[in-house]
Structures are given as C-alpha cells and as structure tokens.
Image 1: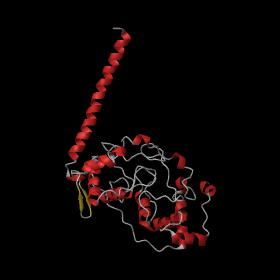
Image 2: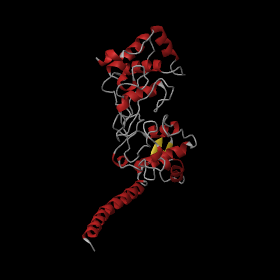
Image 3: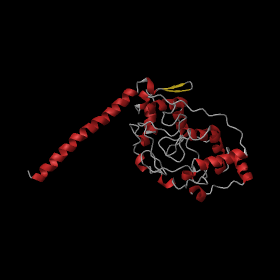
Image 4: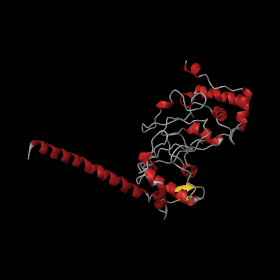
Length: 298
C-alpha cells in the first residue's frame, strides 16, 4: 500500500470519527423534541381552546401542510426551502430558534400562543406562507403546540407580557405632520425611503439575523403588512420590532402618542384602502410633500 493511499485512509478515518458525533447530535435533537411533546410547556392556550401537541391529527397536519418548508425538525430546511430566494421569497421560519417577527410581546421575548395562532390564520404577505384557513380553530391551536415542541426555549422561558396599546386618538392635521417629523427623526426613511417606497439608502444592504438579504416594507405598493393591517397592528410593530430582522423596537425611542402620530403619517403613504381615507384627505389638505432626502443626509 503506497504512502498516498495511507494518507487518504487516515483522512477518511478522521472524518468518520467527527461525523459520528454529528449524527448522534441530530438523533438526540429529534429525541429531545419527542420528549418535549409530552411536557405541559408546549400546550397552547387560546381563549377557551387548549392546543395539544399529542392530538390525533396535528402531526399529520404539520407533515401535509408545513413540513415542505419548515422541515421535519422545524429547522426551516424542508425540501421547498432551497427554492426560496431572499429577499423576494424569504426563507421559512426556523422554529428551533423560536425567534418570531409577529408578536405582541417586547423584543427578545417569546410570542404568546395567540400571536402564533393569529400568524397561522393570517399568513405572511410577500412570502411563501399563505393564509391557512383550511384548519378548524382546534386544529390551529394544536399546531401552535406542535410548533412550540421544536425549541428548548419553551421549556425554560415564558411568553413575554403583551405590550399595552393606548386608545387611538383622533386623527388631526397636526398629528399627521408630527408623524412625518417622527419618521424623519428616528430615520425610518433610511430603509423605507422618503416616500415609503422601500428604496432608502440602506435598503439594498439589509440582512436578517441569518445574514440573508431582506427587503424593507414598501408602503406604496398596496401589499399587506406582515403582522396585520389595522392601526393597532402598525402601532404594535413599532413598539415590539420584528425580531430576526433589522426592524428594531422603538419602545425606548418614541412616546405612545408619537407612535400614533407615526401610524397616521404612514397611512398617507399607502394607496387608498379601508383604513386610511381620513389620512389621505388630510395629506391632500396639507399638500404634504415627501421628505427632502438631500437635506436629511446632511
């Protein structure tokens, strides 16, 4: 046996030695997830519903509707994932990390069961995640429990306390104009653009927490915000942030009344819809112009 062949055999032996622990770790991960299926921590509670990760159908529902993107282990590596190219098609959520964009809870905390339940039913616009209206309420609650069994975070952490949204004030011209000032001050325009067209100077450089390209929301194209379309939903996004993305929480930077002002201003950037008729009228009355990008950059 020549020396070169001996070196190759030694190399294969070393690679094989390191490959075994990797396989064992993968098996332990799946085994641990199976143990978590039977812990109270993964049960979901939505109103009067209790979701059960051991229900008779949830495993099959997940395999039929979810596994293609999210994978058997919930790690976002399903067979379809390879065909989803960010930023146009964001990669599926990795449930093992338990980091979610759409939450009613403070940044860095786990979402509530209701948050996950709502996301399944609402879907995520501008992604491969559709509106899942094929499930009964109980089936959706069971899926929430199933999602929770993928991550150890649910075994050691509780969901964050939902933020409080104060009553929505009356929309006035002064509030709309003040909202534009907030938009400039906290530099929303750097990502979203001065006219909300997702073309700010930082837009092309944005990445998510996995270093994958991600696009800011375009307020002008008529698409639906990922985490809900009501004024309260938009307010909540400012104050919780979208974890896993460059969109931070502004809870420490803007006051509640300023957040409402910002909601009203952002409504003026959107095409006419059921939510922004009054704001569009006010913008027209004010002859509201986009911010001056050159001035802001100085």
